Amino acid sequence: MARILIVGGGCRGRQLASSLIGEGHAVRITTRGEEGREAIEATGAECWIGTPDRLATLRGALESTTIVCWLLGSAVGPRQRLRELHTSRLQLFVTQAVDTTVRGFVYEEAGTSTPEEILREGGEVVRAVGERNAIPLAFIRANPAETGVWLAETLAAIAGLLGRSR
Image 1 (cartoon, helix red, strand yellow):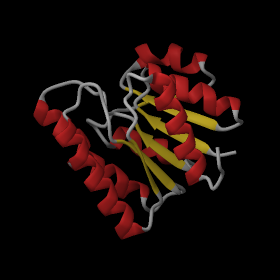
Image 2 (tube, helix red, strand yellow):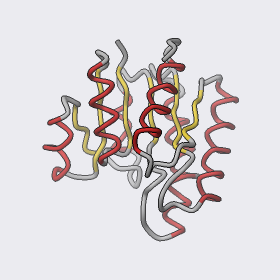
Image 3 (cartoon, one colour):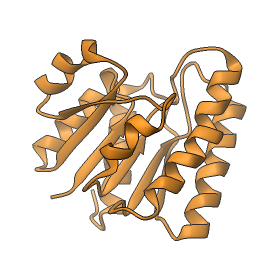
Image 4 (cartoon, helix red, strand yellow):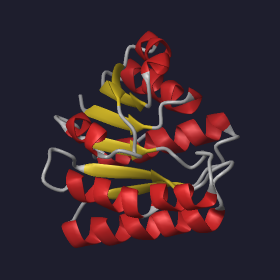
């Protein structure tokens, strides 16, 4: 059993959580506010109120976490905010994870609303920090609109980071 942290607790994040919980994992999902709590807890996951816009709110979510899933490929907002989310904020978050129990990082490198070039930049950030600090990485490239394919790829990525095959 591993504790999986999902940053991005929308519909797909909750679906992923349900599958992971079904496999015996403990799951913690972040959400920006209390309005997301009920849907998250209905999956059996722990709800963590925090946002990448204020990274200090996510620091405690890393406690006892084995795998982090940064599932923000379909985030919406102004282009500059999305760029920060996938570059400077992502870099700081991954760097914070270095001296914790985190043993793997999953980055969603495809999305439905975030521009592809911003997601590529995010992938480069994750690769650089991961390689420099020997953090095992996985990248989700499935189209999030193809939910079944996306879920299978994400579950396989997590299993791979945990040293299991799917």
